[in-house]
Image 1 (cartoon, rainbow, N blue to C red):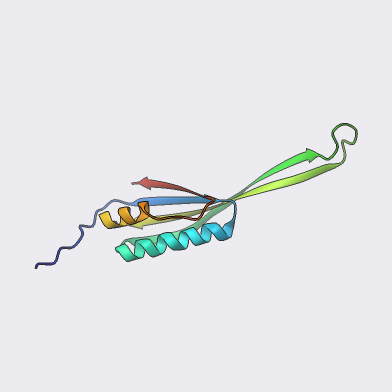
Image 2 (image 1 turned 60 degrees about the horizontal axis):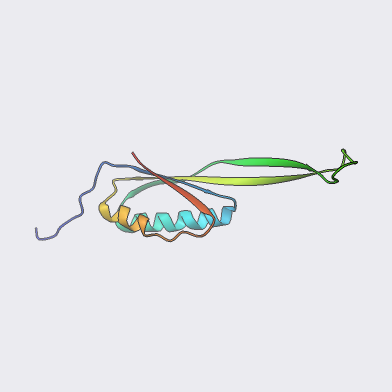
Length: 110
């Protein structure tokens, strides 16, 4: 009875990740899942959300040739992770986690 367990809460944490490169976002997801598993949280995900594609059309020349155009696109990859039965150590370890550059993270407590 001398053992002290961390009290599990009914609180859910929803983590949304966004990045331009899918390999970077997958590395970040792997790091988050490993950290959450070590702290004993129940994990749902990663759920790949639809990739948003922004297209830009630009004229090649500045003045004359209206028909000559170039198209560029930006792909924004998204992943969703939901953590249930989190502990205080889960929240602490997630806040101290160093993610790769180029990953936007949004954490919501439900």
